[in-house]
Length: 143
Length: 143
DNA sequence: GGGTTTTTCTGGAACGAATCAAGTAAAGCC
DNA sequence: GGCTTTACTTGATTCGTTCCAGAAAAACCC
Image 1 (spheres, each protein chain N blue to C red):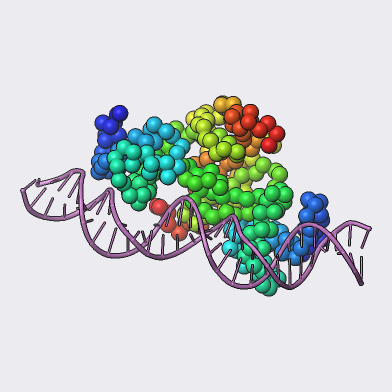
Image 2 (image 1 turned 180 degrees about the horizontal axis):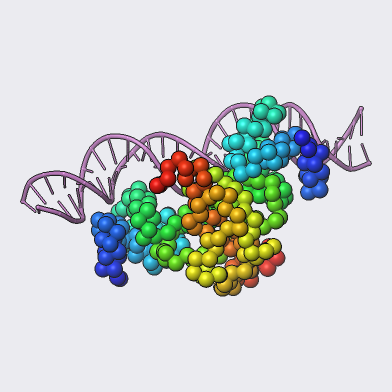
């Protein structure tokens, strides 16, 4: 699928186009919010043998370049998504770890205002909504 | 210091009052947002030999009981604080990892409203403001 | 104070996620 | 096609954290 598009994005970020990089972008496009282990599996399904290092490197490079966003809810492993630059947030299920996107509640770049900044220069406000997803709520109502 | 107060809190939570538990509470009271390693050091300074297990156990028990709150900004180790139950947030320095409390911006339990909940039952909204603290901003202005 | 329950100690071993290091392969410029 | 730079491979290592088991100590009920 849109391999061309991934290539274009990589070049736009002055990054070399390699098969692992394209495969990682494709994997994250297909399944947002997956962890590194899953990305490795998906890339290997696509390309055959790829070292886990390569995937770790690619994820770091893509994060640094702003092509993917790394998210890491407390107590969970790092996860990645290709939706970047729109200041959206996440709902995380305490029970099963499922993650879903949530648009920013208060406009475009809203949450960026802390009530007191204590001299910090704040450049991002990250919001994580914790709760129970509908599946888990149905499965065990009182937990 | 207010050892009495820590005792009272422990009893209120139906927990036994032990020296390590009181020492952990005192340490976190004195220096909020420290990591486990630092808690171990502080407790040992106070009490002498204490196993790292004991501290890990205590931190877990206190977290489960709601006497301390565990926070874990992405890419950092777990940190703990005694300020609980008031829905406050944190500013984190990307450069040095310093953490400072920030009162909730929009009232008492405000951020608890996501724009779409996708069927999730949300019980907490955690906000992390990322930025640069004044020390780091002064030390290296353009980084 | 005696007895029961819970916690802590010792001293490991084990874990998974992530990183480091040095050599090999591939991408892209000419 | 050759060359330089950047990426990937392989394999080992770190780090925070958890788990283990039995023994010893302390907390609390009476």
